[in-house]
Image (tube, rainbow, N blue to C red; front, side, top):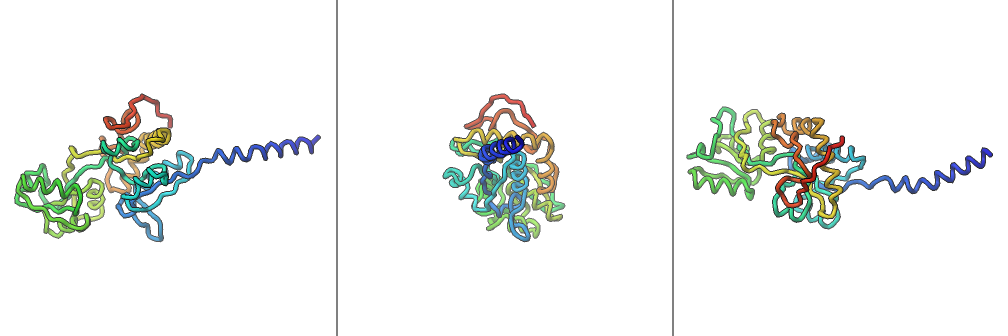
Length: 280
């Protein structure tokens, strides 16, 4: 009788094993721009580190999935996802109407906004008019260059164009320019690394969601990603990651803290306003 029961148990295990194997989901496939500090950047000894790496490694862990994060050029990420190479994009991706018509976005986990950086000891900037007669440094080919040149003509200041944002920042520190205009996380990160550089006025009217896009054909993944991100907002995990990488604690209205209703950025194409309870 013992042998018969043992044989039956062994047969049951054999029958169960393919099902168990099928239950294990494949790794999430995604990518980042590995040169965009402090979001993703080369790590000493190999690999990539940064806010995005910490964020989505933890997201995958909570979803009980492994994750493969490619470090590539940002320009290849959206086409790669649309071609099926990636399940979603882990690089910070600005939500625009055009993009939201072609992809599904989670709600934002960070605000992206234009922000000034100035030299320590300089008078803070309250508005564009404070820059009259001064010079503003910008990174070449960016939206910051375009806006600064438009406002420079209007308010009477000059614009210096540099090949990289670190070069534009250095122009402020050395006194060649009064201020630099760049992305908020980049400016805040630079200020945390250089005591002579200070993050100044953020142009809140330029705020947009930085969120994770998924293909339009996969609303279930969008839902799971956003629920996981929202649970990480709720328990303070994203605030801790942001403080670690950007060198300052996010303010009360930061998207590291704020859970928006529905799925996706409110007011954008693809937004699903359906109320739902968050189960963490």
